[in-house]
Image: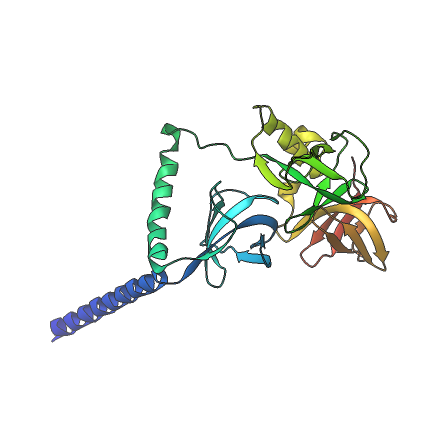
Length: 314
């Protein structure tokens, strides 16, 4: 009798395991049949898990999840390609190729089924990468040609195909002459739109943005130095030796900008990608009293409450 009861229990466990396995297979097949689309566009901003790109009819928000395959770290101005579900949750985010046209394309079910196999192939390629030829270098600068709309301190604002483009002049920028509203200019800029050179555009030069590779191998170091300076560090070496950013709590971030307005407890700043609001509380550590036009650096929590506010050093 005990033996028969034991057999029944074993059969019950086997049945439950088989049922769970069949449900898992059905779930995977259902996931494979989900409709997907491919989004290609220029990256405007990364806000936590949201990758915001420029679309033809406005901004498009792509959500990265813990399951998303992200091939590299991206930043403002990069041209990305994302395979997403119809709710814009990303399956994969990678750098767009030269032949990828900006826009949104719905994929067939067959393409969605093929994506897991591609992912495995790419994983295999990564392990075999040391023995393969290096991938072609990605563009690290671009040329912007357009009509000048306004000069706001260090910002040269030109008319682009999808809206205004802000070009930032630094103390290293070569500016060939004084420009004014309506002038047609040509700017060679880094991928973060910091200008290397601004000059008058030629009569035969067409408006638009053209990606290009640096002419020499020394440029990547210069690019890193420019990016380090844009982050407020005193050169690339200072950024590499300063471990402070890595020690910040996960729920805080550092913002930098010029004070446009002080409204009660709020500091309104002009940041790299637009206006930023920082709230000063009774717990905020402020190194001095600031006023309109000052450049400041603030460590803030996710609710924009400031932990520290200090003067941004050159």
